Length: 271
Image 1: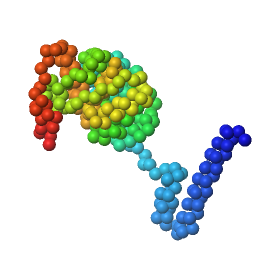
Image 2 (image 1 turned 30 degrees about the vertical axis):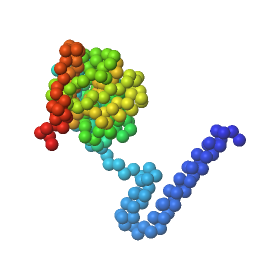
Image 3 (image 1 turned 180 degrees about the vertical axis):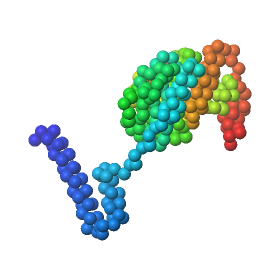
Image 4 (image 1 turned 90 degrees about the vertical axis):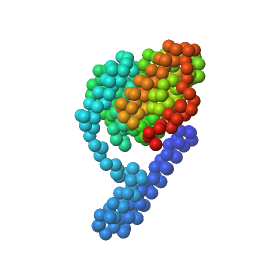
């Protein structure tokens, strides 16, 4: 008998076993039902594990105000702070426990419109509207799942940060040059070059940002996270400034005293 036929028979047997299990459950409960709602609820609960009865509640509609808040943040990041140019960069925002908004593929964040904002389910990356999201959506979803304390993921390609991402030995750079870096960002992680939009990049970025708030992507750009849009944008702007200092000052850089860096890393005033 061909191998493919063996496999088909095996799958059919599994399916029949599942059907028998479901029917047994129905009969078992049906024989004890007295017509009350309690038994019907119990039947639904038992069958839910077979994906026969769906118990998920309908999702709330994302409001026009939420879409407007997202596009306005994109405009500020690109126009006001020069964090992205043309179609580079992307942003995501957790709107509730189940969904995030993501900028569309090839969209220019400086003038992004509501119809260029994708609604994506967090748990599996499924697109819930008619907009194709950024190719980097897998790492946006991965980071937001890994960081329940953060709501925004910002992938940017500002001039100095991206220049440094393309420099040999950049991993050795000390970014603790101004108080803002240890206080708002902390240590910076580096991710090797991996193809944009790939599963490998998504896994690497998610792993890096699980324990850091800033990751430099080799020959690509940088990614940061924030509780709010302002938090993420501020981190990106402060990091861009630090990268500019590194590039301009060269070997004339003077680092902050170690004890002061350690104090700022503990975030005085937030304890």
